[in-house]
Image (tube, rainbow, N blue to C red; front, side, top):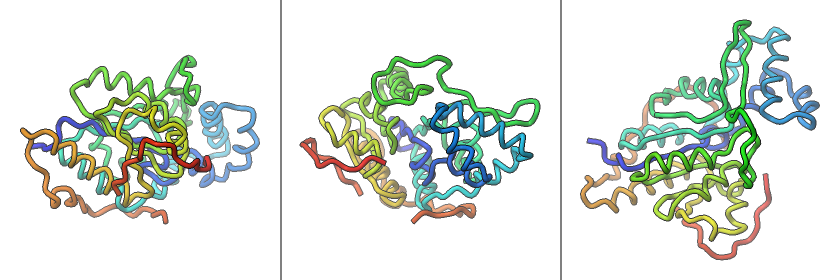
Length: 281
């Protein structure tokens, strides 16, 4: 029987599940960095990525070329076991990301973790009739959020809907970027937020940690992501006396054989007091 059916774990994708920005990775791998950098000052990011896919298609790059680039994204070797363990324990795993569906599903299928996730909230990514990959905004019109969210997606709005749909669940949210700050503010006291330390979301939280109601646990790399996530799941499950206990062997039993991927080079609650500022990245 699943040990943690009352827990929803929400992951960001770029620099959380994988250890890079998937948009930048594809652009760099397919040799379009200079064009991307020249257009970045004059185009919104989401529209720019759609333009880049069209430009690459015009240069003869195929969807298979994009897929091949995505199968080599860097990922810490402990992230996939962490995801598989959380799923095996009965947690409901979801992704909320400003990447796009094609990139996310391609990477997940390569890693063998697509079936671990019940839902993916992200920008649509699809192949059109001409064989060109198209990327569209998550929101068809600009949202009205006052937090530092990108114009095409407010992750806080998605998180609010999940909380209202699943009010009986306890939420764990993992992220790294500016866009992950808004959902951190939406979480309740019984929830947990796991910001990546010394990344933009961590810096924003450190400015005013009392604005975040949820319990805060920082992590640095994939190894700490695994340790912090599984420890948090264990503590939540322990708060439900009617649920079965989770042994340490259950927590660390997800050492599945992983596909060949690149690798990139603790459970620490954040005190709710004034903290030193960290540089934005």
